[in-house]
Image (cartoon, rainbow, N blue to C red; front, side):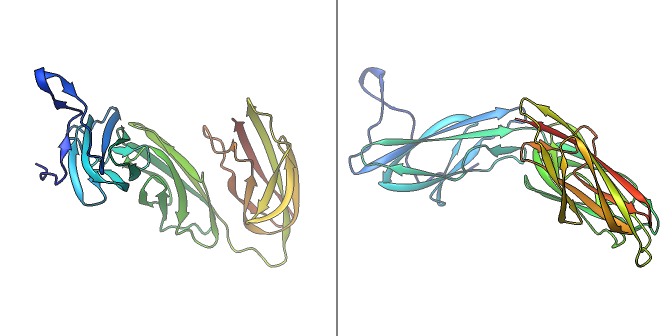
Length: 300
C-alpha cells in the first residue's frame, strides 16, 4: 500500500449541481498538471506506478490512467514515473519538465512499454596455436549492463536481458590471440539471440618475416545506392580504401596475428544473418598470404 500523497489529487472534474461533472479550475495564482499514463506491451505491470513531483511528493497511478496534481506554484516542475517492473521502461523523457501557469492546467504524458525479456546464446570458438585456455569475459552495455564469463570453446546462454540494442566487448584475451565478433547485438523480446565469438591464436612470429592480406568485400544495398568504397584498417590504423564490391591486397604485413577492420557508412552493417563481422582476426604467415572476406548490408 503506497503512502497518502501530500498533494491534493483531483479527478478529471468535480461534481456540480444536478450530478453534472465540470472541469476543475485552479485558483488564478496557482496551476495544475494533468498526468496521463499509457502502457503498451504484453508483460504489463498490473500494480501501476508512482508519480513523483519535484522529487518529493508522490501519488499512485494505474497502468492506463490519469490524475491531476493541483494547487501547484507557477513555474517549472519535474515529473518522474517510478516503481516500474524490470520488464517495463518509459519510452519518453523521464523525468519530464512541465511549465505551470497560474489559473491553467498543463499536461504531461508517460508512455510505458512492457515486454518480456530476451536471452543471448553466446558461442565461443578458439583456434590456432598457444590457445588461451582460461576463457574470456563478455561485457554488454547500452540498454543495461551485463557481464558474462565465457569458456574458450562452448555456448553460454544469458537470460533476462532487456530488449534493445546492446554494445558488445570481449576482454581477457591473451596477447597472442585476437577475438572477432559483432560490436552490437539486438535482443528481441521473448526470444533467444545468437552471438558468435571467434578467437584466433598464434605463436609469437619470427622476427623480420612479412606476408600479405587479401581483403574482399561484397555489398548488398536495399533502397539506397551502395557506397563506392570503404576504408580498411589494420590493427586500428587506416591503411587503404577498397571498392564496395571488390578487393585490395595489403602487402609487407609483419608475420603474426592481426585485426582487419572495415569502416563503412552509418547506414551500412556487417555481421548480419551469420555473415562475418566488420572486425576480424587473421594470421599472416611468413612469405604467404591470408584472406579476409566482408559482407556488407546497406539500407535506409
